[in-house]
Length: 243
Image (tube, rainbow, N blue to C red; front, side, top):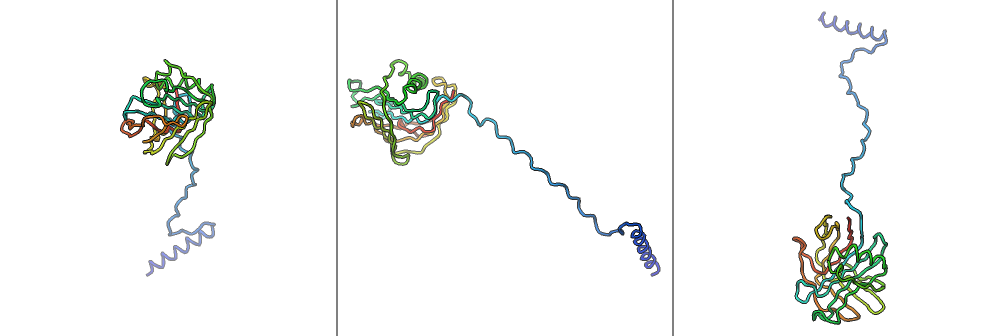
């Protein structure tokens, strides 16, 4: 009992002394945690490298194609390459190449081989820098071009139509019965075509080439792009060539 009273008396003396000297009495509770200052947010992560495709843009736009055959396979009896260009070194515009066996009877006087354009400089550029990369026929046998106007209609769910009007010709190109689209991405430096090409392909099971009211003979036929089903007739949108 005396020992407990002595300890209590000692505590009171210490507390009173601390109060007299401006010090807080001893605490029995634990110290509060030390709070660290909030850190400033760091810089945003760097954008991944390689999101710009290498090469100089040579041409960009649309390049729908129709290839018809009398046999359900190559060789083609009629070939159409349509260009709606939104960028090129010589400006915007349209060019359409048509090589057509109207009746499907083989080479004859009624065959057509020509081009239509609303920008002659663009025709010259595509004719010398682009089309020879697709087929050597344009190097061996130059194509005459006709001034024309161009109009499109339809949609990519049912049917797409391009109408070309020239002095002596009215041409209607129709793509329909579409299958699943896919993205084509061809690297630069190919053996036959040095350009790199990206394009959204929308293959069509059916297509028509109508010249001055007469439907050209032949039908599109199935093709494969690697393991992907395609067709000899297709829409090609967002197409860009780089070199």
